[in-house]
Image (cartoon, rainbow, N blue to C red; front, side, top):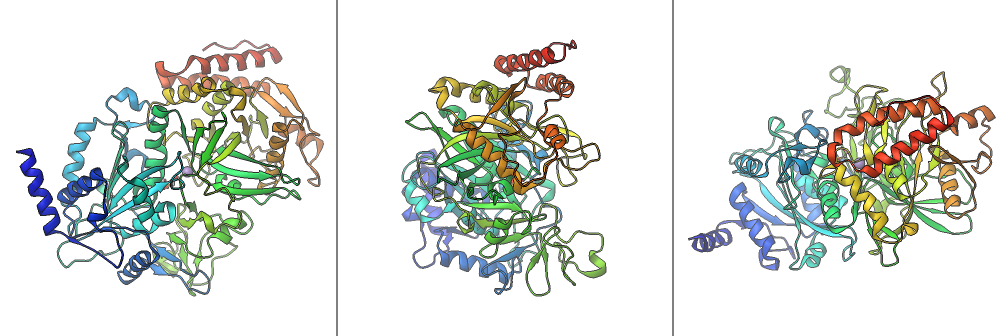
Length: 632
Ligand code: SAT
Ligand code: MN
């Protein structure tokens, strides 16, 4: 019976549905991968699109989709004089960001998802999703997007296929991933991660979208870590819809990394070259609103020091045959926050987005350019805001939505690293963690070993700002900056990190550092003179790794001696330098108490090694300040 049904449905599939073909485009018969053909068939049966288009990733295909979106008013072309080949999209006001409360990890047991994820039973969730997806692509084209996460052919890369009914998603995925025929050729008969997406708005015959299609009442961003599937419904925005990004490259990939012995991390990757031409690579994890993108594209103020960009958001890291940890950036583009980006804060980002960029939810100037808060002083006259309003109607709105974004190819960045496309990846010498802390955490300190470094990952926390993270100034724990992105129990995730100590020679692993650019003095002014100067801290780390910079051992880790940190021409007072490089023992003892309390949420899966590290820290602090504290 099942086989008859299969034959009938394959026949139906081939005969009843039109394929949108262009010269040289991929057609069903090109697909040699049985799982892919069968999956397309299943999705087509479920979602009932009008037509199917298998994306080849060519310029022609992209140009056609962009043209169609301009015709249907879902994209506004920007003026070629200012932003050639660039477009503006305006989303619905009900669809402007990732939705963590609608994001689910459907592992077989709730215990596999852990306390930081929303869990639902996978079978129940599948039937709910099937009812939602039934007929959801009526009146629309179903796009099949084969993509590679990472340089095609890299042993660290993975292939995924996203099916979506949003042409906006197709054009953004073409920027964010290596998408099209090459990825399909690389797939051959191997496995891939199926990513199914719909905006959740079927169209009646002859009807067109009125604005940005989405289904705000029914958003579901769902991950099945055991079967490595993603289903996303109801949103067309960012990480909810560009499923290669947080859904695949972090949530599903973190599960793959646990199973296969590698790391999928929410980290930038940068190259740093000293004036003698010696080069190292660092990876760094920061919670949002800590300047991760700006650090990835930093123009160092130090003469002769060069910083290059490999990735601004995600790193996949695997041990190489030489025992070192190698990283690739699985992405090909950046999905960066526009507001606050300027020639002062991030000149390299401003250069990158001069062309070939899709902007979403920024303002539109009268002469057809984009604008956002923080780009320069005042908005140009008669600037249309992100909702398309102007003048009186726009008075109570910002010009750009605070989560307005640019999607732009990394290769367009003037400081892109020459090894960006290297399938081997780049060897990582240092891993940086950090957060936004007005007090307690000094400018920089170094871990004592891998286990201590892993402990430092668990203590990452950041204070909320007006732009992100809830109440202003309130501390939010965000271990490894992975809180919304770890696809399994975070206690197991910490153990996975610890396991690297035993996978090879621990002396070859990167050294972990903790940084904080955001210390303030009593009057609320920042102590560290500003973002461009962060290259000085990177320089100290570089020279520590080379054995040429000195450090002092403290209860929290190794800290720069004041003379080992290059502070030339900064005019910092001795007092300020002292404050930047002090361990406030009392404040750290309070931090230990805070951590003891926080760690409780991870229950039995919390690794004893991290508890030991906390005890060691406490003992070292008490040694300096013999006030008794409660033990964990
Ligand atoms: O929307 S994304 O998930 O791509 C970016 C973010 O919210 O961190
Ligand atoms: Mn991110």
